[in-house]
Image (cartoon, rainbow, N blue to C red):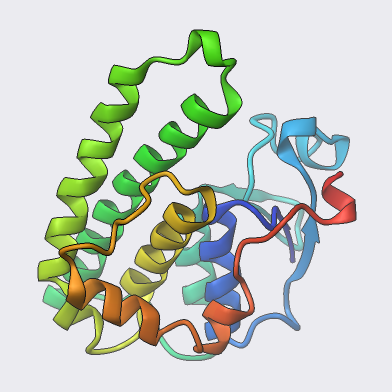
Length: 207
């Protein structure tokens, strides 16, 4: 299998963290590129020109980070990151959805404040998205104890989202008033899957 990814994409980071946790790096080749450049290697497989994109051995593709992670969790050895059923399953998927919504809001802030020309930026839209992020962080602060109970896919999703807040500085000071969530996040930084996938500058392959 081949994973098309970006070192700066929080969505791709969820998948690479999953690969680390599942000990699947020897089963999946990771190719880094810049989707903003609409590279032929990406659009030939995914017309949306989005990462992550997983290319299966039979050349089928799977897109969407959560769907890719579910596929990898069910097809790779290693610990189960998404429970198969019951309350544990729904707990993980509920946290996943919260983190995904917050991540989408953070990406919207980044695009509006750092990608859109300054004269065209919509300040009210940015504040709307930041309010969304703040409300969700408050909910996750209440969930910090459950996150600390074990490192599963819910934790992966939250790490990727908080990492994006820090990397793109879409909500500076998010730790204020959220001591439990901040302490949990600080505590997982040395976990191999987290440390190895920290977002960084674009690689030469990304331009």
